[in-house]
Image (cartoon, rainbow, N blue to C red; front, top):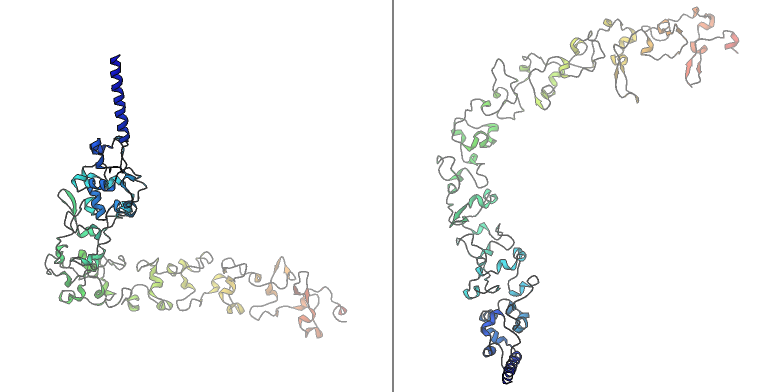
Length: 537
């Protein structure tokens, strides 16, 4: 019995002790505070009879106190500085309890005094808040801390310039992109950019190399006392080192040597159109010291005429027809020279511009043009007039170069001699069908004309009154020589010979105009009534 009594006493003592400790300590401290476990350490955080005070917290967390004193960082912000530390950082919740827990995605970084902008606003917190970027050794040892970061760029970023430039990166760069450097003004540097230098990319002058095993771009220590510090002297010192005597920063490849270099001192003085030509047009590759053979134009110029004037393998030089004082379109080749070419200019050909014959398809041509009219002019009579009357389409058989409308064709060769009024008419009156609303072209009629029927050209106003065997022969009554008045008609051969007063009266007195069903009028000559009463009342 005594054994069980002693055991009961021990259990009661243990339970009373545990109950008292539970009333003093609400739970185990977080891992970072485990060194404060025990009743003797309570007053290091708690005041007797009071809760945890900010004074006690900051007495231990001196780095926070320093930031508050300096009015820097998150804890110095207006919202946080008015709160007690215990409101955000309570303890006695177990060793694994995170006393600095907060929602990183909703955290307002502006309260820290460092506003996140540009590329900084889209990166994860852990990319910046790393121990490797903390300078303070004691803070650097802490796990998952957000303290200790400095606001200077090189605490987080490597110094690409490796100390060769000012460490105030934001004087040239911004948080949007490291390249390019929008804040940099080359006019504030020792070498101001002008002309073509303004358009050059930085890498053209500031080369990339390797320094201390890292990529490095040279921005300091560059020599620029003369052009040859950066540019190769293509003249190899023959003109000295002062490039600006001939060149400018606007364009090194477009030298302004016209104003400084006297070309008359060479064996080829510049005259006429050559005076306005860019130097490099003749001095290829910007090499001005190499001699140029300027004895003949074709040494520099291509033969625009592509051998048109080459005779027996000899090609004449351009200066035989062209002058330097005038444009290439001007030529000294005149009419007198043309008359010796094998094609004499006559009539309207003399007044025609050269381009009318020699410029075809956008190119000037002077060879194998042909000497026939059809070689230059469209043969409008082709397929209408037999080759018998103008062999090889030689228009000169009828026309001349003075006036194209003047025709001298011997019509008797066709078997149809022109006499009377026919000799006075133009070719077009008989051989061209005039334009009408239904016919928009001037149709030609030459070989298709027989010449035996007047009605081929003239309208038959008599209808079928004088048809014999299906044809109306106008010449039985009319004549192209004596006029078209019908003087050849012999009325005595009709059924009503004229005598007495009938001989004196005009034809139309008896032969009246009569209307027909189609509303057309025609004078009727064949009368079927011959009694006096038929005409006289």
